Image 1: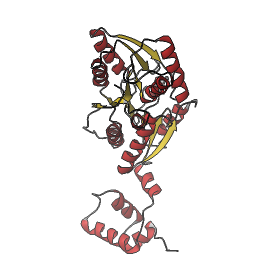
Image 2: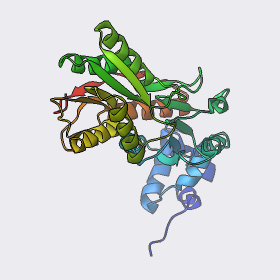
Image 3: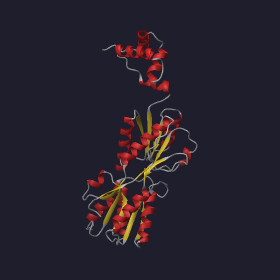
Length: 327
């Protein structure tokens, strides 16, 4: 087993104090060139590896960012968490994940950990109903597509543009009755803007729209299939459906079972554009949120807040259209 040098060994070798070694290693501008050269030579000679825990304690940092989402079983959040973890890793940070679905007080626990300095910041993307807990929080928090507090900035897609893109996809095919599948109306998010923008365009063109909402925190295939059954039963003349990737995928499956031809009789447009839009019976036409790019921006911004600086990246990014076989 190789002998591991300690910081006091480096100090002895360099002929300086332990405190001087620590300051040189943790602060690039500390000490004279001669002192720095002595310490760096001793580190190289002894092959000293600094203790990350000790370094973090000296800097009052954990180098950990918390990520709060409802679940990672949903394709959007799975993709988001993966991209956030990668982006934070390249910025020198580890991640701690909290899934809030079917867990009481999960957000409270993470927020308390942040306030106790058990993590350096939080990227919050859960469908929170108790936003009051974020009022007055001074520690670094970034919201991902969520309204939490006037003081907490939000990274999100330009959903107004996304709604207009979805509307144009249907208008090219002369649809007369479109059903929109939305998330719970209890949760106020920037994503709600795409339904508003979509309806505005549809109404201007005289197209009938109906909105059906999923229950709060419902992200599973079972809930989506139940809602698809309800849509086809309640709106037998529907010729267009707009909703999240999972919801629209469920509608496609049910349409095939019922003998409804897609896209001849029914047009489908998904909103999110995750990998599942490309892996089904037909490739779904989709409005794609730039998840990887948004994750990278969120990571940069939370690290900037942690460091007390500002990141000049935009907070809002435009979506794109993925051409598919369903509209």
